[in-house]
Length: 129
Image (cartoon, rainbow, N blue to C red):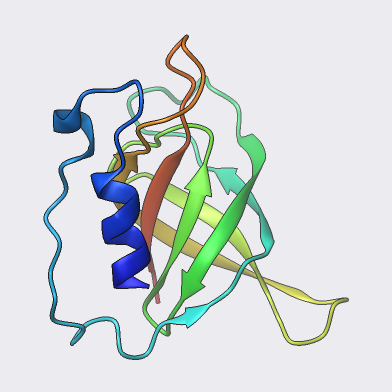
């Protein structure tokens, strides 16, 4: 997985290299319990205290991997760091999903997408217990 991500990071494309320079760690100490999970993930963005008039935004993301502490998802927008999402984590049975609160810990824009800036984002979530 790290090699794949490294190859993607080094890929050129229309965007400048600076937009895709992420630190890559060769240590997998924090990644050892992550499991690949490619599934659509329904989510709800909660309202913020600064803007309580906004309604809850409902959408779908694509999960990339999951661990007991969090999840990596692919989204069409970059939520704010510390934004709380209600994510519906799939279970081994296709008929059940578990609603879980998760906090956005980081976001990274992918260096490809639409010319209008509508690129997808990796979003790192930490489950809140």
